[in-house]
Image (tube, rainbow over all chains, first blue to last red; front, side):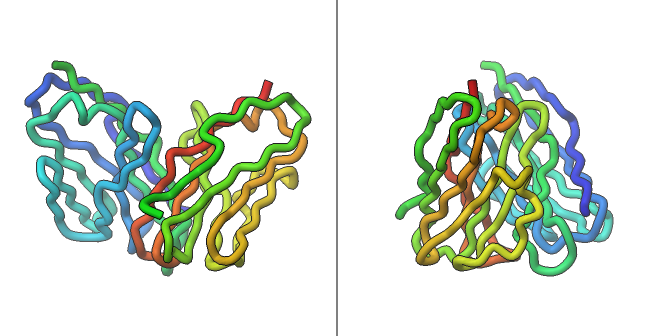
Length: 111
Length: 114
């Protein structure tokens, strides 16, 4: 099955700073999702982005499927951005909702 | 409903007891998924349902784990003869259909086995 690796594992930012989180995957994908897990444990879907670039407010994501990586950009970070960011990709080829998660990037934004 | 609902939010049980965890997906979502999040293990896929059918049960950790879904809606994950290593947060998600669609997660059930 697919391997999903995220970097960095931990990140500390000052409020207002920008950051880039990376997700590498070992096989081609047709379903790549980014999630934010807040300090209360709730997983929120940020982007469904198997390819291309999407933006939502201060967040944007780019997936380069041919090179097997995805990037999540956070601009002008706020303390509410703190938490764990996960990317997830399907286990095998074809249409599959069986997601394999990376180990996550733990982000702490300091005021 | 407005979102995926899971109950109970917390469950403390004694080793050897059986537990049932419930998931109520978003109305109209045909696909439902169970994941487990353990300290040091990350998020692991357990089982999915398309309608009431569970084609792939290979992610269930042992034969003490079972799941069912009725009426294409509510799902129950049952753990028999719980062990301490079963302690984790059990997360449920649903999506419009199986495959290339967004998965929406519930708040999870935190299970503690003493």
